[in-house]
Image (cartoon, rainbow, N blue to C red; front, side, top):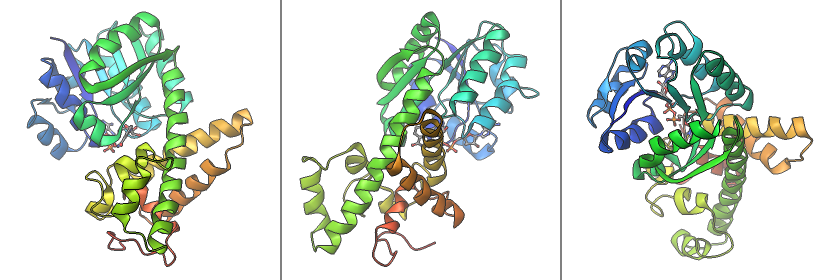
Length: 304
Ligand code: NAD
């Protein structure tokens, strides 16, 4: 049994932390939202009232936070992890952050005697619930091997990708590809509809043909086709437009910095930006399907 502090009990963290409890670890959990702490307690996480309380005595600290700024604050802010955890503690960041924040986290943690591994995940809340996430680990080899043992109960695949920040770099490239898959799925689902195809009949073809993708199988944006689709729930977020935009924008920034040409990624980034501009950033990222719809209307969405 390992004593684990879990910071951030949102869509991913609530589901992931439950598997560590099931694996026999003692998990103390903190989120700024009290209702989420209470919900985590239902699956055996011990809810605590601060980061400080969560990390005291912990052997491992795991972060699942929205953005780089949150990670920096939780790590190095007043009352944060680096101030209150014991030196030598293994810190895993499962959040999707920019490469600079990940490098900064490695540097801050390392210079203060902590072990840090960037440990972003892929697989959505479905993967988090089913313990089939892909973990991409970056850091010192020995730390990565210790991290592998911790994340295994939450994982379908665990990859030691390379040195510090290589996990997050792999994640950003992967999510840029996911964004482009969503674009293809949006346009395909709408064209199939306008050509008079039954959506289920077309989905059955695409999922076993060359139009298939993880997005198609998991998030097909028409109600009643796949169980995990946000279209079944008025496009309430399983992966919000805001978070998806963050990932694609970070990848596009990386492409611009390295001279790689990414017009498709730029297009989906801009479509997601329009959702944010209309205060729809909390809705699911697959609501970009509206961009392909002839009149902007989307089956399964009440328009708000
Ligand atoms: P979320 O917004 O549902 O959860 C993040 C949680 O962090 C929230 O509950 C928030 O209250 C909490 N939080 C914010 N600041 C905090 C602080 N200072 N102290 C404690 N808690 C704090 O987001 P999510 O969907 O669970 O995603 C978490 C991370 O995982 C993100 O970086 C996201 O990009 C990444 N991710 C998400 C998915 C997905 O499908 N949702 C998939 C892969 C990776």
